[in-house]
Image (cartoon, rainbow, N blue to C red):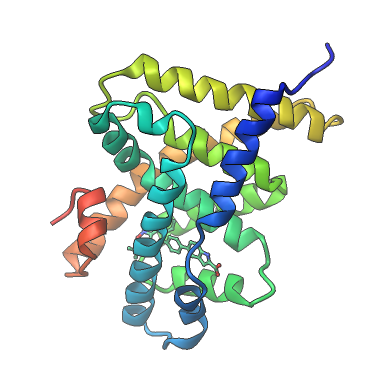
Length: 232
Ligand SMILES: CC(C)c1onc(-c2c(Cl)cccc2Cl)c1COc1ccc(-c2ccc3[nH]c(C(=O)O)cc3c2)cc1
């Protein structure tokens, strides 16, 4: 059937894409990827700084998702805590697959590979990065998929499950239409996008184990990361 994006949906996409583009890691932080040393210690510290900056960016982006601030306050916190790792996997995947002109891509990959993460997590992590890269997602799709991930109703401690589900469905409906319109010859494209969300859940479980092994090696996180990841 003819797929139509309504005026409201177009406004919704614009609001989310603008927020996604407006909130980025400051370039002076990102530039450090090129400057600092390459020891496992230095890499870990730098990635910790990037992750902390990325969480701040993520909070600002989330506040701009239409309807998010109308949710119950405690649910807003529960959604952010429950989705932060997945949203950061998505964002770092987009950075790594973008082949950035400023040379950050290879350096970021190099530092992630040498930051004390054990091999068993490295393979699924870089398989994910590869599979996201192969999708060649448009920025509207990246922004909307991140919003869909944040608005996942079945995160721990979410009380108004239905209110979150309604918001997520609004995002899913417009993402579905965009996929049909922007990938007319790939009827399964939307399904493949959603398949990445399943992979994100698995990575999120691996990540919890990564945190434990870093902590066992006495690695320190910032207060913001401790708060959002319930560590220390
Ligand atoms: C606390 C640190 C060590 C950490 O723990 N887990 C992860 C962790 C890991 Cl490895 C993998 C996936 C998710 C997490 Cl959450 C990390 C490092 O997390 C990030 C590293 C880099 C970036 C990031 C985001 C946007 C960026 N833009 C640019 C730019 O150049 O413009 C660089 C950049 C880097 C985000 C999270």
